[in-house]
Length: 320
Image 1: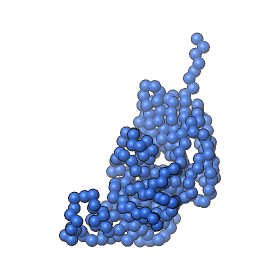
Image 2: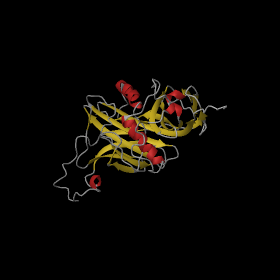
Image 3: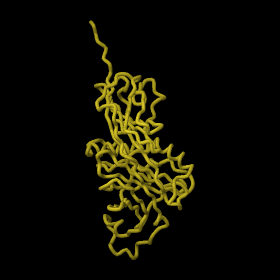
Image 4: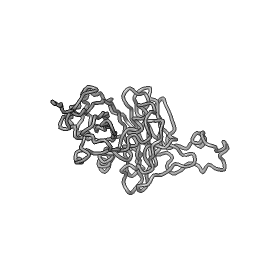
């Protein structure tokens, strides 16, 4: 096993802009065009696991890329996620191209070991293939035996702002505070913003990078709310893999009661002149390690927490 080389530090920073939590959900998200920012050459491991606040199930996703293209696991080859007490196979399609995913129950927070294994019967137990695989199982592929280890950072505890806090101007400041750890983990905020002007609606997601895990960040509201008529250079919209991942999380938290394209950017109501709900997801991420036989890789364990605030339009008072 090896830690990420210097090139992966750059990869990690780029991936932060598009990476968010994979969680199990009732609706499918199209991952066909969602490819992580993997290097264009070499054999690359990309894996992630997230544990959201108050949840006992971690969401696991993993993929292998060769020269920038996803490598499919065929025959009886399959990703396995294992702890000291639990084991699952990743047989479902994940949130980005070429990935496999599954939930994993964590009775205690501990490392997750990801392995490519050859399980010809278990890997196909929900398919029509016969039990007798002598004539159709090609045997273990070249990826079997490759591994990665995901380590979770400490949990995220948001201490401010209070849920439901109201802001009236895009010049206002969201004073985000949390219990600091300062262990070198990456911190970021992803938001889901939904707005209404009474006649039409808008919805979109954004990402804000946080420099340090020091427990506080003053974020201007214009990182979440903007004037659709003038545009904004402050907002970084979420897209691609991150959009799919955020969609999955929101779907899980709503018990599957949202539309499949809920997070797709839709600007019909101008946010600056609308009432908006802003769901802020603060995420702490820790880099894991991957097999030395990979040329490069990105393995992330993360924990997250949420707070919701509101932007309300100031209505002019008519003295007449």
